[in-house]
Amino acid sequence: MNPPKDKIDKSLKSSFFDAMCYGGMMGFTQDYFIPFLLLLGGNARYVGVLSSLPNLAAALVQLKSADLAEKIKSRHKVITFFVLLQALMLFPMAWLAYAGGGHPVLFIILVTLFTSMGAFVIPAWGSLMSNLVSEKKRGEFFGKRNLVTGILMVSASFIAGFILHVMQKINIYQGFAIIFMGAGLCRLLSWYFLTQLYELPLEHKKEHYFNVYMFLSRIKQSNFAKFVLFVSLFNFSVYLASPFFSVLMLRELHFGYLLYTMITVTATVTVYLMMGRWGKHADKVGNLKVMKMTAPIIAILPLLWVINRQPLFLMGVQIISGFAWAGFNLCASNFIFDAVTPEKRTRCIAYFNVFNGLALCCGALIGGFLIEHLPPFWGYKILTLFLISSALRLMAALVLPQKLKEVRPVEPISSNRLFFSMIGLKPVLPMEPKSDTALVKSLD
Image 1 (cartoon, rainbow, N blue to C red):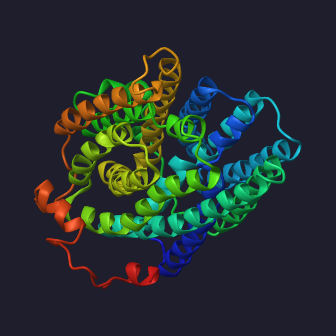
Image 2: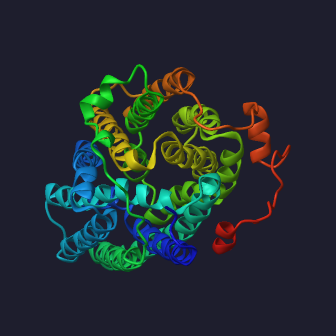
């Protein structure tokens, strides 16, 4: 059963407005939770907990996300209810900042609740949207949608950085109160547009059900289970170091909020500028090929921070980071849509996020523990942690993807040719492909 065309068009337009508002929320929060924690007096161990506990909670709640969607027979109700709760979590954060601070643990609890409410939505949202977007155009659609999200995220992040820069001379706590309040208002608007999405009913049968133990038991045979293992181990290696780039810049290198924003936003800008192009290539050459090419690039990123920590050099590193992460994250999400049937998609997305969240949690916790016990490298313990993270990333990137198979027919291409095509030197796609379907026309 296919949804009516007018309802597809309305839902996709609403999805783009949701993307704009979601981008605003993320721009006001994503790169500013750790700086606020540091302002509250949190140390590297607190940073590790802030980066791990929300991911652990997000992973665990998603174990029940698919069950709830099946029980109430509506993914849409799950999405709208928990997005509203997530929006409401931002206002106590704003109050905490306006009141002049509080204990770091209280802030970590609020961030954990905020993250958990958002995570509960992901399986149902991914399943619902995959029913609305043509299989052959998913890369292009989500690339365009993510570009919209990115534009608003970058704009909001710059605004937040400027607000903090100005308010640092007046009252920095009130500066954080302003950006957290702005994030809450953005998410409320996002919730409104999500209420406009059309849900294609799914028939849930007993044979579609499988629990987490059944999922794990098939890890040797299942291509999807091997994919989950690869992404989880790779992200574990990433999160050993990822939370501590902010600590390095703000605490060790003493960068101001504006410089910190410029460096972090450089990667975000690049991610969303590249996602549309990555999506078009992935539709042609396959999601797995893109992940195999980008994972080794991501693996060497911490090494570049070890080599040089001058701001201009770091902005160049962030451009490379955004280029690689744009392809990897987009194709990891779309690989799930290709690999599983619609009836099992909500549960498969949930299990993917469960194991990925546990990996992020463990990586951040172990990184926070190690950073206090490692010997310094060139005067910084954080750099030693970066070296360890890079080595583990490289092992995961080179070994684990070789066990995976592409799940749909694609055109064969070498990694070198794919790379040169992405930067426009030897295109495998026309620079401006024609939008000859109703779906793509509806996005222009």
